Structure formats: C-alpha cells, structure tokens
Image (cartoon, rainbow, N blue to C red):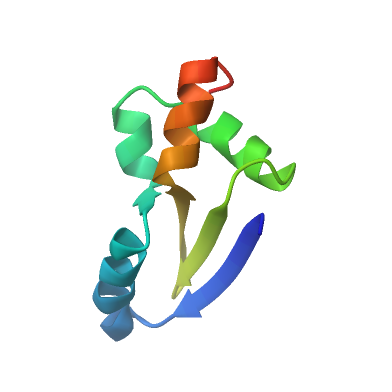
Length: 79
C-alpha cells in the first residue's frame, strides 16, 4: 500500500481519526511539529516507500502516515 484515499464527512472524522491512531497512523501536522518534513513524507508515499492515507473531510485534506515507517525514514535521514 502506498497511498489510500478516504473521504469522510465531518461527523465521522473524529471516529475515523481514532481508528487511524489505533492502526498506527499519525497526522502529518503532528510529525511536522516534531521536526519531520511533510513534503518529503508525501514524496516518499508517492514513491511507494511509505504508507499514507489521504483523508478528505469536506473540502479539507489531511494526511496520515504510518508512524513506524516515518520514524525509520527520519532515522535514515530521508525526512
């Protein structure tokens, strides 16, 4: 899996966010606050080297990345 695209409405977004957290995915905004480069994460996901979920909530789009893979890429210096 490289990028999975999901569309949810605002009422279901909180429930889906909890499902993502339990599945090991973390938001791109949280990662970027902690020093990860969100654009490089997105590029790695488009190359198929990182699992990601593109979650469309209304007109807003949020990206979630597999936490273990993102941390490993960060340790390798790819992000």
